[in-house]
Image (cartoon, rainbow, N blue to C red; front, side):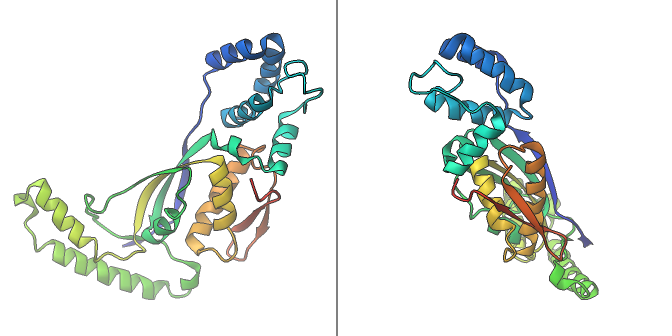
Length: 264
């Protein structure tokens, strides 16, 4: 066995089609809308934030004064616009843009917690029905600090017993279906704490919610560790969508992340 650390990668995010967006804005509001788009594109740090703002402004046709007779002034900057949207709790526009994460070296404990968040997500997880592990990775929770030697001995004992049972089968003479069935049975022996991988896609409304829930001080240690990393990434990559999040340091060097606007 080996001790591992959960890893977080932002591997994909929503992208706009610049040509189609420009054509749409021209059809919607001609020069007024195109002037707004030019300014918004140059100031935007991400397509996700630009897409979110376009989705919000189209609801009121608020790309400039004159497009909607009821609108006599608009918020000039994207920061002002998105902050006002967050403050009002108009969360639906934050569902248009998504992020896809790869969480590696996370435990089955982590994935069991993660899949409880079902709204606005897509999940693809390494299948231990098909994947036969060659060794066990294990993240050491902070509660086990000072007990590393004892934990290592326990996990290695499980690993040895797993390997012993695995060797009792003649894998070279099995077809794939038989291998799948035995692999599926063997996974029941492996501990929930073993390292695995999962791909998780979610929209920003959901990501905001999960960050707030899973970095709370009372959250399970591993998922707090992972979503602390997610929160830092989101603050850096999407500073306007997550502008209201502030952090508090915890003794385990993770952070509690709390949004100013909760009901988004």
